[in-house]
Length: 153
Image (tube, rainbow, N blue to C red; front, side):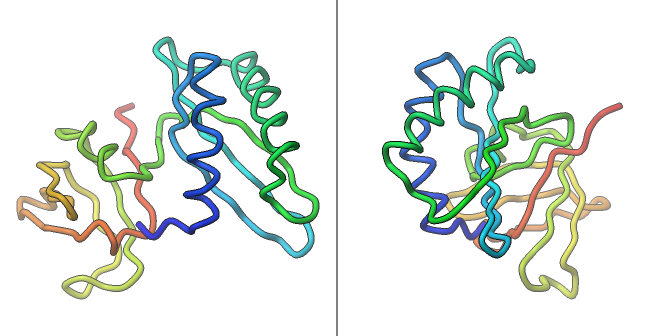
């Protein structure tokens, strides 16, 4: 998944602040919408994540963002749990979900398809292997535009 340099920098900058209050910074989404942007942090914790946890993390990272000032212009900070349909941002996150069903959307087609849903079989240094409709498909991690865990409801 192509992660922008800005998101990579913000992950490195904010991870310690999130960890300081007992949570893991699962991932970041950053959307620029004209002069106003949205910075969305996904956090996870050993006991899950509640509204008060999101408020605590928001307060903690706001201080870092005020000092470091990595975003030009106005922005909205949102802090959320990854939810049931947890987005996957990194290759190690796919590894953590071996045996689970995931959906991925690719930046460009692979074997004529851009969308795949299957069970994570394994990961390599640069790819995710999914069992899709009974067939193993090796998907280069760099080709993944978006990935989510499929909820087992």
